Amino acid sequence: MSESSSPFEHEELAGYLLGDLLPEEASALEERLNQDPHLVAELLTLQETLDLLPYGLPGVIPPAALRDKVMAEVGIQEAPTPIQSALPSLPASRFKAWWRWLGGLLVVALVLLGLDNWRLRQSLQLAQLESVQELANLLQQPGSRLVNLQGEVGAANLLFRPGEWQEVILAATELPQLSSGESYHLWLRLDNGDILYCGDFEVDAGGSAIVAMRPPRTPPMGTRAQELWITAQARSGPREPRGEPLLTGTV
Amino acid sequence: MADQPRLSDSPSRSDSELIEALKAGQPTALGVLYDRYAPLVYGLALKIMANATDAEDLTQEVFVTLWRKPSYDARRGSLSSFLCVLTRSRAIDRLRSQGSSQRFLERWQPILSADTLTPPPFEQVSIEERRQAVQEALSQLPENQRQILELLYYQGLSQAEIARQLGIPLGTVKTRSRQALFKLRGSLQPLLR
Image (cartoon, rainbow over all chains, first blue to last red; front, side):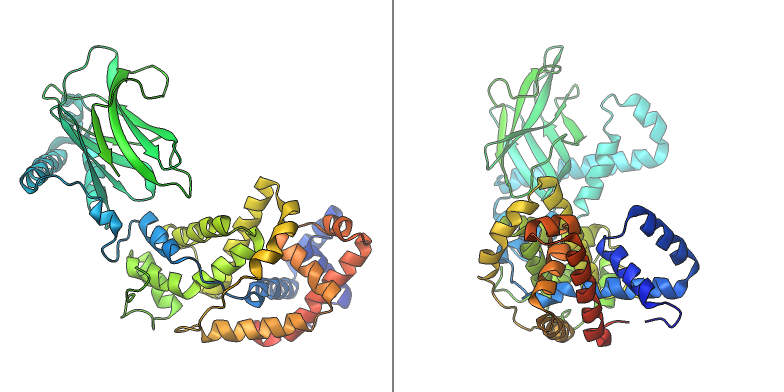
């Protein structure tokens, strides 16, 4: 204990830390703390004492799966896990073709970005440049996952980091043009049955789109993403899936 | 996954080295720190939340926070203390938001009776030493003082709430909690800076 502080002050410090001082007593002590480093040191020591209390508990080994969940949430994959087996089961040739297309788009877009970002933004109607940049960022993250969505017409891939649904990248090709007032909607079903709206998008004249989505709701802790699907429905309607899924994919 | 060797080149690295690696974006560092401190964090979360699912969620949140915002500063204390403070603070916030401090009392004891003791792996000697010292210090406190300190610390109850819960005067709670803190401070002096 500091030599300059009295037993009364020690009592006060303990009371302050334990929350049993009256507001006026606490204010008066805070004023003294501002002027007396010895008193502050004593307060910190008492705080440290309290902070040692958890060592009095027995350590408890958490379930083994929790480690994997933590690593997945931060986008780390240390070893092959079931997650990898859930990667899209596209035929190899189509998978490679997809990545060539995506990679080509990325390279072209990044080169153009370097040339004239503003002009590109003006000339491209899809406002997708941020998406491309974000795609590049996502691709650089270890543990990023790709889910393939397929249907009778078109195809799409969703790129995301496990546990981080705040931002996902969707790339779609060969989708039909929609009527005015409609857009494509992406939906996510969780293992508890809940359905989350992820975002909507439109395709360019060639039926393609690459967009970054920021779902307004993310899966709550303890739930797992199960299934993704895309519908075509009114842009301004209620945020619930309408109509048959055009493309579906399993997470 | 649990049976696979983990990061064989890293377990002997110090906390400071691992935190630097974490800040540099090296993901293996998080795995090592998790292996080192998850039992402490999870044990504390379980003690406060008294619910295994909630404790798992909180443990996950603490380590993800450590990865995304490694705000730990070694000059302000040990990493284990930092993790404990973070865990406790968030656990009590959650309890308050759930309004569940009352039902806590009904739940915590049976759950902790099923604890599994942590094996003493690499670099946990200091944790084990602290554990023994704190357990010894706590065992020297009179039961009525230790109980109040635990209600204050693990549940974040106010002294008035404790007085009501235990049916004793507020002044008694105040006196006992202060006495407990000072006794602990004396017993744990070698562990304090």
